[in-house]
Image (tube, rainbow, N blue to C red; front, side):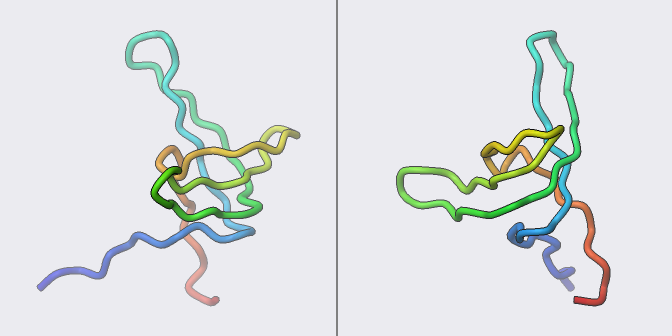
Length: 74
């Protein structure tokens, strides 16, 4: 029996961790961010999120985000 997939699309108000690979081999930087909006993928662009992080607002590809779990009450 297969477990249900834990994947879900990001939504405004979700908390996430941004993973970014640095120039030094095997170095990964992680920063927390608040998702402001989500743009799904299309033929020309990958899925991305507008995020608020460290006082800045910018867009990040969704593949670099790890969503924090939501409460079971939605």
